[in-house]
Length: 391
Ligand code: MLT
View 1: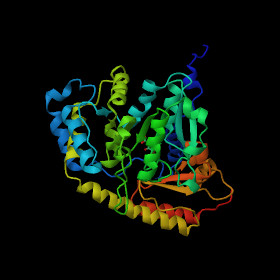
View 2: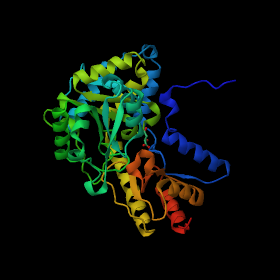
View 3: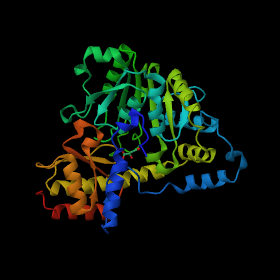
View 4: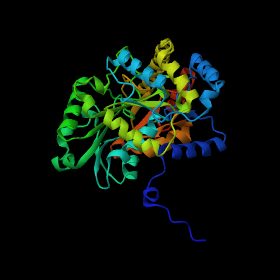
């Protein structure tokens, strides 16, 4: 039988980064390897008990068995606005400036459908979360990569983007604290970003999924703290990393009412909202006791210190991140990112992510996550120290 002809948009797409890594992991597991997984950013710590209790109770209520509202339950959107005000001192109207999402990946993937026409440009960080690029391509747009370089603290340099590109651009994606580089942006950088968005009429899409995973008691800012940001900004947050809820699929976007309603318009035609049980649990997460989040940060900080120190002892070039649960590690000389990831997997059974999987400027780095306990981190460091660094 002649193979079915698939659309260009998927024919030309490389396999999704983490799906490819899953496949490599599976092959190693089949061979009986004891894998230490520092690959995907998926918390190993469980969802906090009071959130699970709220889900259980919500599941008993038949009102929660029906279709949810498209934009999210009123209680959930109010909880988001209250949390935002407490955390960032930013006021939001829960009716027009908040929308619930089935994970921030879903919202980010759908946003370009609301703003990108074929051949329009979206400015995309490189390296960056792969979805910024593919969502732009799915909408028929053209991603323009903004390199994030170490010498610029992994912030894009707006001054080197050609004027013609800026004039054609409709959307800019930014993400701080940053995945995969773990960089944190200052308010003055955010101010520059907001000014750029205003000057070129860009939709400023800020992915803020990692704002709560910070260390040394220095909470990173929100883009919406910048005066005037709300004229052009949509900011994405997720409950995934803050409350260990990756599997629950709940997140939200906030900001400019027009951008929020445009995203909502796309979504009403595609999905039917977040299950109410999950929204009730999400409301409890946002409004309830936040001490488990503080404790979680302490755990990640200990792991960070252990892994950074171990890698340094093993001769690696790596800096302790101020936020996120990622380490952005320079690849040892003689290896490309992919070669070194494969080497770590086959020789030490340690799973990492190649930097170039996040874009061409990620070449020369690998990403490690802090999502295993201290014993396993120590074990990973031991295995790496024993490794032969020749091909
Ligand atoms: C990552 O490892 O980059 C993230 O976990 C992926 C995601 O949040 O979808």
